[in-house]
Image (cartoon, rainbow, N blue to C red; front, side, top):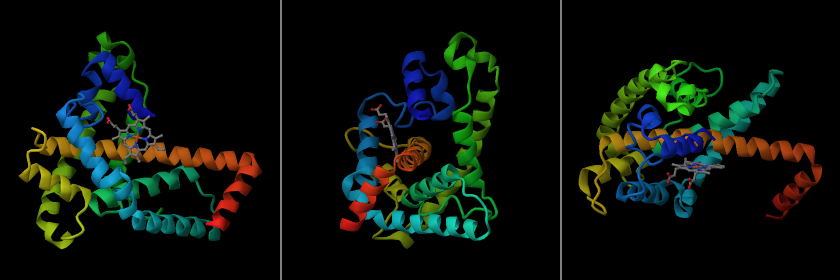
Length: 248
Ligand code: HEM
């Protein structure tokens, strides 16, 4: 998993890679295990990843599953193959996008591409590139593969877009009264509270959003793809699953 590998490398080699991906360690993945990391974790668990939050957002997952099955059905009607890893990635990013931004970031396949989608894809792609400077830090300044340059350019694009989203979100917050998304909660925290001696900055929030998109998309879709492959290889697993479904 790129985010775990990069976090381990950051621990070993210092801030070299943090700068490109994570707003200079202002995020959760690369943060020191101090009060800010605790606060980011607490907020993420409370509003997005914990059991209650997962329950609250269940309808988002059900709807997104519906969109995914519909897209698969349409592909099959057209006699087109379905790229499972791709369609799962779209679904995962859309689920996260709706919890964080009340927005599906990947519109159905074949539709006009949108800016945010392209940037998420680029981020995931570049994060997975081999970069010799990560293994031999003393030559990292050479940026042999141009990874650092591309990351910095992408970072600027993300920053512009996230700043725009922030402003839009602040002005439209009243339309989500009673059902705030995760970004509303984070903005509210940053404006009002000092929790455990920490206040979230705009940079912390932007970096956290990037963490969640990169850490949550490929991991979940790979696990599902792997489970599907196991079931195809061993039909007894598929039968057990079907029995569970029938019983529930
Ligand atoms: C099957 C799916 C997933 C797997 C296998 C997975 C795996 C992992 C692993 C091994 C770590 C490192 C933990 C550690 O160092 O203590 C991690 C961290 C993390 N994951 Fe996941 N993950 C998955 C899904 C997700 C999702 C859906 C999200 C968010 C939407 C997410 C967000 C994060 C974040 C933010 C961290 C850093 C936590 C921290 O620094 O405290 N992950 N994940």
